[in-house]
Length: 175
Picture (cartoon, rainbow, N blue to C red):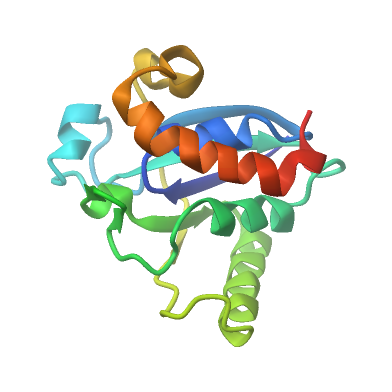
């Protein structure tokens, strides 16, 4: 299994989308990119640890490529929004690809260049491409959050519309 570590705003939205994809074995919500040796949701929300909310996507490269993982990444969030996604504001919601090797770095930079050259977005892509350094799984109640809490107001107002948009665009890639 290969691993992609991606920050695209609230990890509940990211996890709910990637978990549906053929070739994705598991998705773990957590925190990455900060200075602390361990962190919690409360600490990350304060914005003092430098961690981003991320998902680690474990995938079978013979079924789904890293480029396809990135295609979903750039579809499910706004990569032109610095340190925020919608009403979620702070560095913990930044757009970031934590690459695990030189190949992932090169592919991420290439995808960003192609999107920029094609003028897919009207504003500059601000997605960070940074080396992977650490990952801490989020607390248990954050895992599979949308499936377990889909009727909660945040899920209805924020997560569900993103998931529905994703489902329309990527249904042929579902398990």
